[in-house]
Image (cartoon, rainbow, N blue to C red):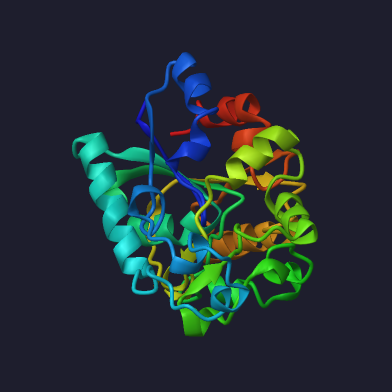
Length: 278
């Protein structure tokens, strides 16, 4: 079977798959986790996040050091990673959350490199629609992430979270949004590894989808039924739109009774779902 390439969502890094990888490898599947553009080893932290004393005003006004990262940039990086990992052979790519539009752009441009596209409670935007557009829909109205965002994304160039604050209510909001079913000690450790800025360009880019591009790639959507960041209703909308556009290549759907971060709360169960794909 093809190698699994795991791509994290906004604010996270390849580290978030650490609990999943051993399960997948034990199941006989090669797997590699990579960093997305603007994250992990490619992250650049705004000054306010490390400077002392803490300056709450700067949180909402400082222009992000990853403001220039676009969807094209993220897709080009992912393409180079899967070429290197697969040695030119197709791989199965698992995209979480905001990595979804990056996978979509990559699969549209180079469908021969993607054996299977797996969306783990991820944005899977329709043709010509940005991921950001979905955040304004009724299906996203009660998500827990939007109230946590700091500053004007258009002005600072990022979707920004404040991990430096000691506001207990805000920090509890972070846990509820991302790690509702994760052990609190593990959730605190994960929060300490997050980076503040997700480049807005990734969410604003849109991809025109074609039947012989993205529409030709087998795809699976893993619905997380307790997700408070990308609500189940919005996840269902992604699938419905994809199937309406490409009915000859319907989306395979599986469900997981988990929050937005099953790689931390249910790594074994998630691995069991991923191992047979592609």
